[in-house]
Length: 243
Image (cartoon, rainbow, N blue to C red; front, side):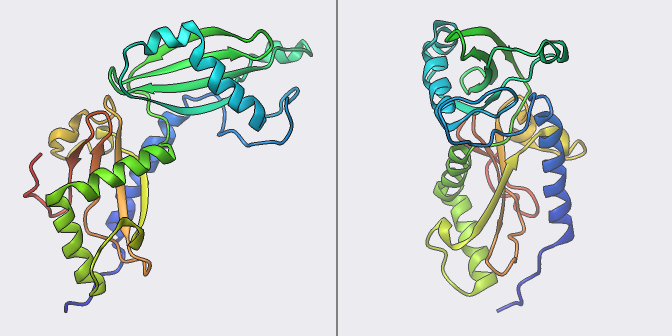
């Protein structure tokens, strides 16, 4: 059996490029990811508490301003809920309403909704929609992407062969490998023919870095189009998969 190849530097470069693209777009969100705090209600600059997070999730989605935007939508995902960052002048006043940003991705229209929910009044203050803005993947989205990759017959055969070549064992489930996932943007590889993945950025896509417990990486990083629930690209030496 050929000796397995160690983690290649160019795989890491591509992975880092994807992370940079994701980070650049994530800067569009007003604040870092929310930390969970005990207690019912936070004050001042406190991040949202666990109780507030659950309240915002339930009440914001039920508010007509948001529910109307999602009416008839088959698939959407709450990507992030965090305390809203007010203008400096508001903070200087010494007293401000406690508000939350709710980011919801509408896969049907490939649109990111940002709703500002006012915890003091129990109402939505504003709803805006944008395209091409991709926040980091949720755990549910990563699980979806992994399932799509492992359930694709042709790609699964490629995974099985690679795993056997690297480890000498049979790949029976995703739990046998380690997987890192990040948002994929077509703009991160401007000189590459991307086929169906050329729409990634407008569509919500995930790229997977798959490696064994011994840090031997598979020589391809499949791209999953979460908007279309399909394999978009299998780069690096795997060209026979239908794009």
